[in-house]
Image 1: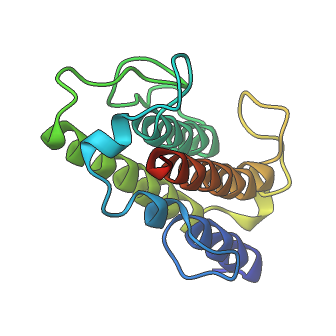
Image 2: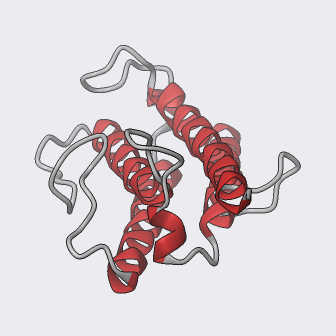
Length: 159
């Protein structure tokens, strides 16, 4: 593994579930949440934590698909960008969707770990962004939504 790939993996992991100076990563932001916590929304028309979890899982899949240049890959849930919540949206379904996020993270991590460094600067498949931008971009995406989740948790606890 080259230094570039190792650095990208480090950034990717810190944004998801590794200790980092910036604070709570995405997996830490959802740790210990109940399905009721995940379903709460600040008001009608706003996203809840569960929707954000599915959204982040979906975009990990999209980046993996682009890096692999594989139009045959399918996301395991119906919908795109903001997949619908399962019915019923119960504790078992929440556990499955958190596991889906973790699995999409793992699958993308494996692709990044063996990605050819010579292709990092190349334009991504079906995208205007480079392959490297997709990798550090998905890490930024995780951090953005980790912060959003942290805010939603604070708002939920407010009287």
